[in-house]
Amino acid sequence: MSLIQIAFLFLAAIAAGGLLIAGLILAKVKLPAFLGPAHGLGGLAAVALLFAANLLGEGTTDRAWWALVVFTGGLVGGLLFFRVLFKNAAPLFLIAGHGSVAVLGLWLLYPVAFAG
Image 1 (tube, rainbow, N blue to C red):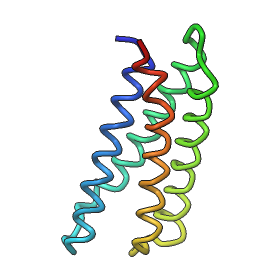
Image 2: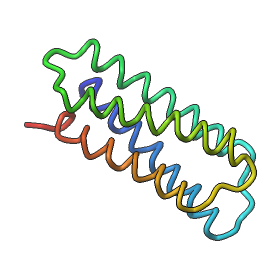
Image 3: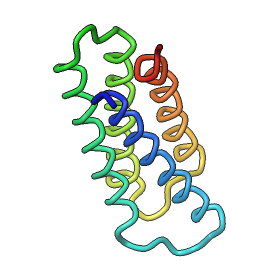
Image 4: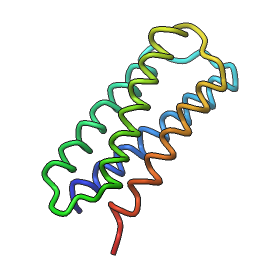
């Protein structure tokens, strides 16, 4: 298994955690205090792994670099929106937008990680 495949799976796991957080918010369940920071730190680690995979990978495509840009934007946006601007209660459209950025990044990265 290549480093970029591991990065993809790590990012997909972090995205699944984000779905869990969104589901708990929609169900109006009080989130455990560690869940948001764990999601953010996991995302930071996954983006760092993708950066390393892009640097060390032979024949890294433009899509992999664009996926890194998209995931970095999602990371910075999540930090800005959910830890600075809307610390206590984020609007659902921002949560959906943050998740959409993750889906776009996974869509860009999938063919690079699992192409033939």
